Image 1 (cartoon, one colour):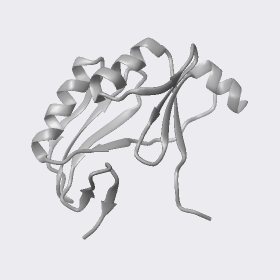
Image 2: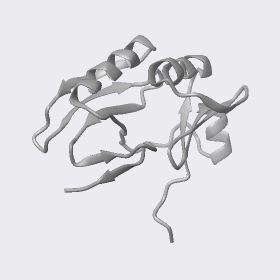
Image 3: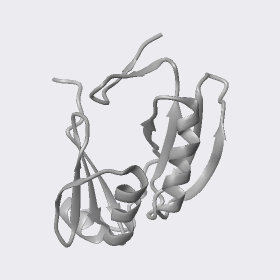
Image 4: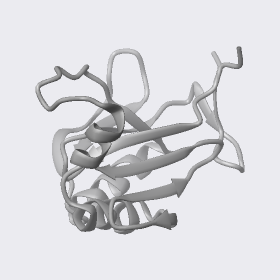
Length: 140
């Protein structure tokens, strides 16, 4: 089986607020949208933001299901870009979870939550190379 992710879909409460965060904050462009979902073409996969109740119905999942802990990451090309992107995301409706700092394992990172509480790590790490297509490769 291939080691890949095709689509990541996030359940969201308000499509308009979510769209503002991703379009104005990250600068991403939707490739499809309707009254329940917006898809963004990423580098090798698609990110979907799906109205939470509709997503729960689609999965046949009830609201009382305990969810796992996770963080999505957006890697950038430099240490300086971490704080710049974080500022853009906050201006677009994001909430600061952790100010940018240098973790023990190296690099520089901070955490922002989107309007629905999904955690995004904004990070720079010299071991994570980003090519001209935005593809990330881990190398030591």
